[in-house]
Length: 108
Image (cartoon, rainbow, N blue to C red; front, side, top):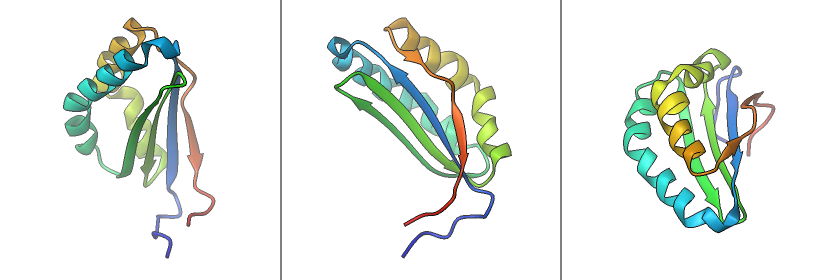
């Protein structure tokens, strides 16, 4: 049975790419950023789910589900994410694409 989400729910997707030869480094920094990102993100209202993943093929993604576009937008102003974590990732060669918020059409 599909999880019931608010009609206003959105999926926020942040993606980045890097040289696959730096996978171990990017994976380690991603794990390190969780130490300060998890509590900061959990403190925001409207969070339903959050996932961070790093691929050995040279890609990193953060996917979160929020109860509304307004709550998803909080991430853009979250210092721990927008300044600290982004800076750490860019310092090791991660290049980010623009973040996109997707209104949820359906779920399984």
